[in-house]
Length: 310
Image (cartoon, rainbow, N blue to C red; front, side):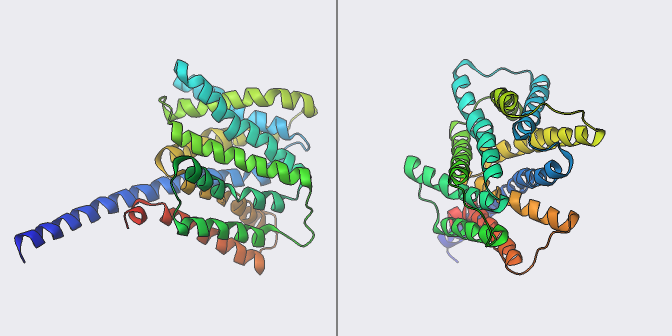
């Protein structure tokens, strides 16, 4: 072997080693980020089994505001003067607007229809990256995202599903809000630490939700210990921990890869309903579940450093 050939082989080995390390780091980041939608998937069963009924905005308020206060008491850091505008936009898109529209869709549509409409979020993020940054998504990621919507439909839809125009519009607008928030959070990359960034978004979103809860929800009744525990779980796990992991993932992964992980939320809800509430999961629903999981894995691979290098 000539000296030039040996040098080329050496460089190939070094490059492959770097790609392996980057791929392993990306996989760990994806796994940690995936914990967020898995936790959010448990929200459905906690809400239906433990919380007082018909108080959606109160639930969203009590999930975001206490978690934001706790994080800010811990971090004690103010945003820089130029960051306030972006922080308000991100808090509205990622949390306040998304939560409000999510509950409107949930009340006007069956859960399956709302989840299927929301599954277009990865496609919306790809469209933003393509249209604004001229970054065409890999065809594998695009095809897998379309397949994920189809799998979600097979998993959740039934022939008796209702299609309400206002509910569909709310679900589409909510998906667009979260997609824009995910894209902008990665694009803007705020200078403040992750926990402070998360805490300020939660606090601002809670303040935005406060007038909605006061105007549209009935006052809370006297709460049992189990209901206090449910609200604490939604705030500490469903907001503080989950959103910290989610925004960490946005900072480290492609927005497309992060948004595709959101499909794990309804999948988790279905699995918990099957395991804890005796709900059925067979036939077409089981096939849809497998298709959604395959779609998420395919998008993660398509957006990974190794696939990009290839």
